[in-house]
Length: 327
Image 1 (cartoon, rainbow, N blue to C red):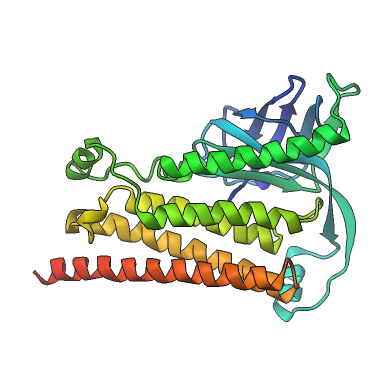
Image 2: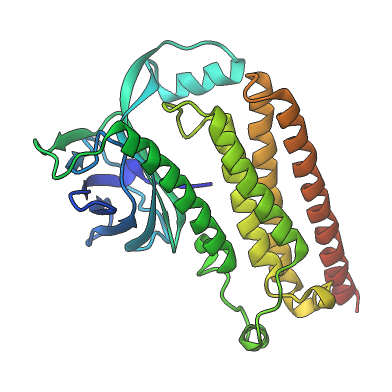
């Protein structure tokens, strides 16, 4: 649900010495040129007004394929003071504990957490306790506690607006893969853009609502693996995938022509996968008794209804493909 690139980072820097702007560079294993960041918004107060440089002592090969060289978008949460549980065991041992649902030894540590939403790749995250950090001595400007609260609200609003723009573009991370796959499809894209399918509108509005409401129950020091974060990201990404699936077909032309059915089916199945991710996050929220029980019940019912509609669409598209093969 996000591009997680901390392992591939060799070194990098982020610069917020100009209020309202976060610029930066990231050098990744396997890339000759750095990734450039041009983001709107500010970090949390610990990094506001500062230049932060960081180094990964143990970078790993395997550059993320498809990560754009220019990351233009809006900031999410950017901080070096988020408290996280750091396991005192290896990853294999940790996975075994998770599998057996056993407790594991850990200690509190400060996490570097860099999150942004780019036009090309959607949500990108660097989260680590292992980087070596170097912060300049004096902030170019100062953010008060009240300013930080306002900035967090602004960051949330910017992210919501960005997700809406991403959906209008049929999904930022699908910008490349959603391009027309044939001349016939390309010709169809040239026509006047149809109104969005009602399911797209409904899922987007629901995702935005849940994103706003879930934030009320999120602790300030929560990690990106928090169950409510999984729920929020699953719903917002599913809405973008539905935009890619249904955006090339007029509602009155459903089910799609066989020429487009295969492409639509792939995207619908991706949307279904993210809805399952959202429900998995909700399952974890139930187990940990997060948020309000009545709210969780409402969200589950609504998500399952959307999932049911997606399953119907998938079945209808499969019928088109089956008829094409049989004919």
